[in-house]
Amino acid sequence: MKRIMLTIAAAVIVASAGMAQDEKNDGKRPERKFDKTEMVKKRTEETAKKYNLNEAQTKQLLELNTKYADKMGPRHRGGHHGRPGMRPQKDGDQPQARPERPADDGKREEMRKQRRADMEAYAAELQKILTPDQYKAYKEDIEKRGPRGQRPQKQEKK
Image (cartoon, rainbow, N blue to C red; front, side):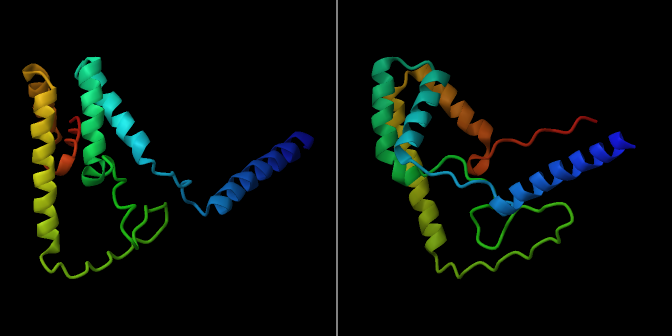
């Protein structure tokens, strides 16, 4: 009987500690500080490692990534977390209605064209830094990602 009571007491303590953690964070992940310089360095290091760049190429790539850091933005954007009014669903939550989009006024298309031009300029400068084989591998990786930088969905096994 004592064992059962101790087991129940331990379970209650563990459960309450878990709930206290949830209340403390309000169910959200801790916010990460965005450091542009670190992002640029990390992106450069990843690319240098992936395509086997030498030190001179890595230095040139760091300068290029720094130049385009404001134009290209962060590589990963956590799904809908950035949209106001949207949040990940928890078990038992009711789906949230989508917020209405503000009027476009042609700005979205203009921004899309500007981003495309920036990406093409970046690729042209990158081509000068990489060897033909490295650039070919880079272009193949870009094509594999598909539209808007998305990675292809994994096929379910049947």
